[in-house]
Length: 273
Image 1 (cartoon, rainbow, N blue to C red):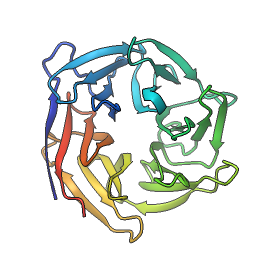
Image 2 (image 1 turned 90 degrees about the vertical axis):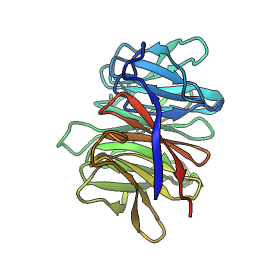
Image 3 (image 1 turned 30 degrees about the vertical axis):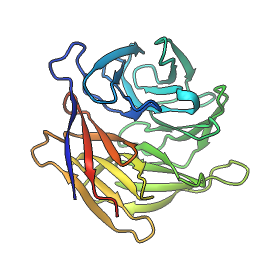
């Protein structure tokens, strides 16, 4: 259904693209990702240049851009979410979760008004955690306490009505409605993905939900209206796609991180129905 290529190969570069778990697209078209030693990397829009902009000195999981290009980075080692000034490289702690501290802050999704949602995976094999919600100033805390089976990637519904969350060991994706007052509704499973370990999700320009699977190495597409699931791109050799985790769109181009290797993949011939 699609063709992909290596967008930037950081295997032998200095700095080295260090097993990127996350990927996000800046408003200027550059592609950003994090490394296993806390690095925050910027890849030029054409994929030719890699720069280390900042570091949390931890282990970066999900990253996301908010309004005005503010970057949020979830850090496994510090059990916190940081903000990164993409111009200066300055790093500041945004939150450690508030009254119920994070166990494993995994991914952040930012609404147009600056509201930040964060998944907490809890401990592997122990459903729990939940989804947090914070105002732009960092105030807030646990938003949905419903136990999730390794809450992972998040995506806001295009109409802002819900938060979609990956449950990696369900395995599948659930939907948490956002009430008129901003309160969380009860999670509703929307798709089951047996035989996979889903990790990251993103809504495409076609309104469908794209899923990056840590195992097997593939990207799936879900029609939420009809419930159908189809394979966009799969790699049984785990070279072009190697444990893809998070996803990000730049127009109709789809980028995936590859936790198992040292590159970012671009799916640039994506058939959009």
